[in-house]
Image 1 (tube, rainbow, N blue to C red):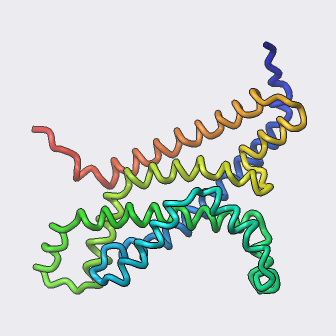
Image 2 (cartoon, one colour; image 1 turned 120 degrees about the horizontal axis):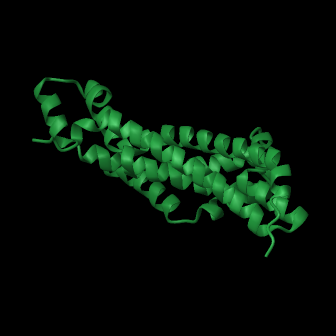
Length: 231
C-alpha cells in the first residue's frame, strides 16, 4: 500500500480553512448554548412544577433525539414551510452556518443545563451559610450559588465541550467546509480516503488535547479548594 501525502500537503490551506470554520462553529455554539443553559439550569432546580417541568421537557426532548435529526429539521425541514420562507428570519435560516450554529447551540444547551442543575443541587451547604448571613435571594445566586456551581461543573462541562467539538463534524453534511468537509473534498477529488480522513483525525486529536489541557488548568485554578489536603 502506498500513501500519497503530497496531495494532503498541497490541500493544507483547505484543512486550515476548515479548522477556522470548526473553531468558529464550536465557539459560537458553546457561547449561545451556555447563555441558554444558565436559565434552564435554574429552572431545573426550581420548586415550581411548571417551571421545572418545562425545562425538563426541553432537555429530555433535545437529549433524546439525535443531533443529526435536529440539524436536518432546522436546515432542511423549516424550508418547506412557506411562512418561514417569507419571514424576516429566512435570510438567516437559509444560511448553513446559522442553521448549524443554531442546532449545535440548542443541543449543547440541553446537556449543559443538566450539568449546571446537578452542580446547583450540590451546593446546599453554601446556601444555608449564605441564608444564615442574611443574603437576599438575588445576592445568593449572583455571589454564591452560580459561581460555585459553574466551578463545580468544569469537569463535566469539559466533556461536553469535547463532545461538541466532535459534533461539529456534522456541519459538513450541510455543505460547510469544516475539518471533515475538507477531508471529504480531498477524498472526492483524489480518492485518498485514508490520507484525507487520517489528517482530519489528527486535527481533531490536536484540538482535543489542547481543550483537555486548558480545562485541566482551569480546574487547577478554580477547583483546587476541593482537592483533598495532604497531611
